[in-house]
Length: 87
Image (cartoon, rainbow, N blue to C red; front, side):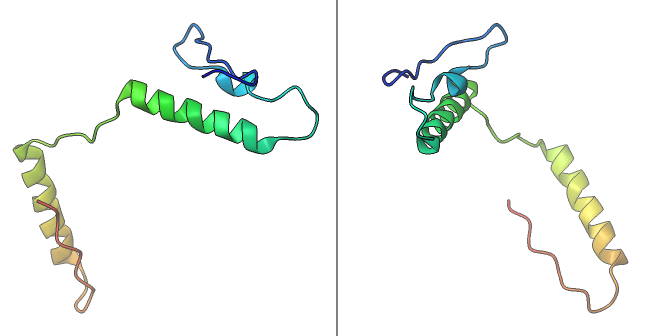
């Protein structure tokens, strides 16, 4: 990031310290600018680490279905049915 005193610096542990470097040199309380910089740091970090949903193998999926059926069998009569699982 660049401009208006907002620079991206890497620290030794891989995180960005841009948030503290983002506030303008005025005392007018420009919270919006700091929030924009913080959002940019968060977005850049998420892109960098590339989070993914975990992939469940078939054995784990079957175990969860078995546990769900067991819990539903314990439900009192008239209890609302759970939503159908995604496949």
